[in-house]
Length: 343
Image 1 (tube, rainbow, N blue to C red):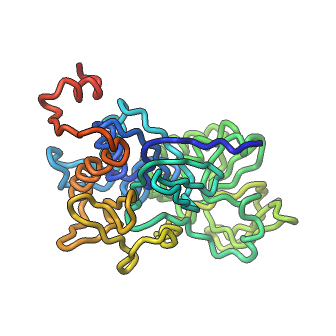
Image 2 (spheres, rainbow, N blue to C red):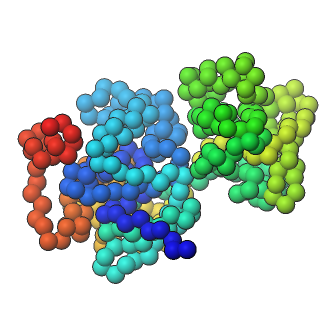
């Protein structure tokens, strides 16, 4: 069976605010993009680490939360039809001569592109592994750190551990497909959206979800198949909880990951770029946002937006080598306004 290859103009690695705005700027110059992100949703650090935290330095917005900013950017890029590959990390990069690159993700997705934009913040997010003896033997079969296909959990006894947005969101989303769903958190207070917490407790009151206070201390099963876990309750007493699937959401760490093996010049795990194009030491590979470095660099979302605009102008020349790019303003260009759907 021949592996399907997705061909596109650009691949953007990272779906944080800067990666999303890169899709917008690329779209204005007719460069089509696919976006890959290891998280299960758009927004990057903004939505994963501080969705409710106010941000005060986005031009024109007196205050906006990380989640609101991500939602607004997703609305802004709708006209350009970008395709997203969530819950995936780019594992390998192969150069196709002067034509671009072939990328393969850890989920087996293969993309060929003319330019690559790295907008991965400080690197890729890696889920924190709970300190449970022997957990490695269950990973990929019974223990999962993200949800790629909800159908995989249909009719199974699912145990979710954690108190953040990911834990609560997947409690709500998986409850209809799971045979049973139990949420365990070490305390009754959550770091998640109050709306999600209220919906979860409503399911508990209905008997559709079980919520228990405690911490998982031991896994039980054979050949990578989980059957139950031992939980130390809030009162100090231990009990056994049935579970075929364990989804631990204990937060994320940031690592440069496979990007470090792509042949780029690096300075202390950051990627040097020129400030006219935001291109790296490798032609056709650009780096914008917190992952790049240059004299005077400020790690601000605002700076990343500026970098995305200049990157897109340079990227156009690789995608359309025989065309001349005429700079236009969205306020006065009817062709740009048509692209944005406002005419």
